[in-house]
Image (cartoon, rainbow, N blue to C red):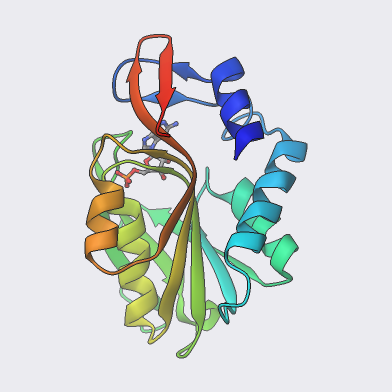
Length: 190
Ligand code: 5GP
């Protein structure tokens, strides 16, 4: 998605070879117009696949996921990051390792917001090692639903998440794929 790539080049900042900061337009301050375009693009790319629900992980996936839900006319469910285990039949939980915080959290969703037979589109802001996406997929599948696709705003293609998810059979579409980064330098895949 060209507008997104241009925005990343203009306002994104590679902190080092691993971490890209996009907090001026994606996950702290939000460029709502760009997010609306992101939502329209995901709606177009995942059209006609029988998707019934959009899911994301709080908090940085919420803006693009909300716009995708709007574009597709579907409900959005936000999976929560909890620090403790909840022992309740009403709740699904799985442990996920956070790339940015280098610590674990319990990804949590109430069963009433995901139904057996749902075809779920997972939307997230970044794909690095794939831990968040695999965690989301575990919860969706434990609920008896199917992961119909995974839409990523920015994939760091030099990290293994995209390959791992594809090998596990998930359909992953990323709007911008970063091939390489260094301090203040960003290169996209062709
Ligand atoms: P993964 O679970 O694929 O290893 O990492 C994805 C999650 O970590 C995303 O939900 C995102 O919040 C965070 N993340 C991973 N890499 C980056 C990055 O370079 N910049 C920012 N801002 N967040 C990242």
